Amino acid sequence: MKIYHLSAECYPVAKVGGLADVVGALPKYQNLAGLQAAVVMPFYDRKFTQENEFEIVFAAATLLGNRRLFFEILKEKTNKLGFELYLVKIPGLLDRENIYSYPDERDQFMAFQLAFLDWISYSQQTPDLIHCHDHHAGLVPFLLYHSKLYTRLANTPTVFTIHNGQYHGAFGWDRLSLLPEIDLTKTGLLDWAGGINPLASAVKCSWLYTTVSPTYLEELTYNSNGLEYLFYIERAKGHGIMNGIDTEVWNPQTDPMIPNKFSAKTLAKGKKANKEAICKRFELDPEKPLFTFIGRLVVEKGADLLPAAIERSLLENEGEVNFVILGTGDKENELALLQLKNKYPEHCNVFIGYDESLAHLIYAGADFLLMPSRVEPCGLNQLYALRYGTMPIVRSTGGLRDSVIDFGDEGGYGIRFIQASVQDICHSVFRAKQLYKDTAKMQQLRKQMMALDFSWTRSTQQYTELYESLKLTI
Image (cartoon, rainbow, N blue to C red; front, side, top):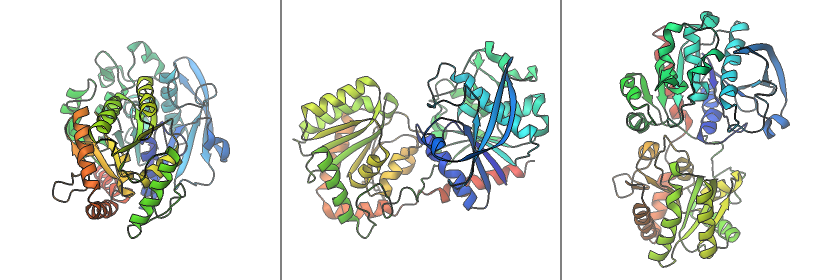
């Protein structure tokens, strides 16, 4: 089965968030399972494209309204990622360094989708399935089925995965002329709230859609930034599949980014050595429980709650806890955390930015990972933490709810709380501190965490079954 994954991100080519991790792993595991999966994404002038070899496998021009855009399809020569990687390069549009935030971002992703469809159409390919990820590829299902240019491909099944339903990529009807000739009686399939909404269109037009966790599938019906009714009426097309993690990349026994490798058998020694390395770097006491937050310092992640929660926890626990924060985001949150670092240097340290090696070290050495997210479609950080025997402390939402069971419940191994509030975070920190004192219990829970299976092998099987169900309807 030939599958094309369309995405704005793919690790390690270009990454902002979890979308990149998924698209960088799922196709690899699909190929290992016997499918033929490839990734198509925009070209970015970044380290990966500068350091690897590509060949031009196709070149043509597409029309964005009355603009004629020359494009090339570049293929990575060695398939070093475990799948065929294709990049869509358009001079002046898809050849820049950054992934997002350009003023003509809507044009960039529209041109990306049109160039992909033109390539598939002109080269007479007939993929078995096109898997689109988030709104950046959301117009593809509509164009496949309702543009005369792509009639030959009109029976191609499409699957659409929603990694974050808060972002729709919407724009006004004044930009309809940028699309190729379409069946104007079908424009209702593009519309939501008086504009063209790529995410809504993909939900309507794809053969089925998936979310990155079962709970998030339900949450979209009451929290999707204006698309709640759409997800309610299209619920029958939806399937929630929990993301996996790449257990080759995230493996404490072989991880080249951590100084002290360990397994479940050498867990106590390995965790201790890595924790000492972190604490030495950030000038903290390794004897105290170490709490961490890794990720974007934004409201969606509950990062605005961290400064108050950390300070209150330090005061309530009389300095018996330590915190390390790794992330970047809203400037107010960054400033508040840096001020906290200066106020409590013996208990709190902050790294503003993102460092992949440091993230691996923190997962390997920290005792607890804080994830007070207001919205978390799946979450991967808690899965990385579990793999390294670091206990997640999570708000009960989305994929966090699906993947973390409170240690107070049967079979539990983490800490869950209900409200995204300073009070709930502080209470969870206190529970964690008390648990930390019980060395034998902590050791038993850490081994339990490391034995959990959140690999892509399990998730890949679910996607395969979904794909096979579509073949029965053709």
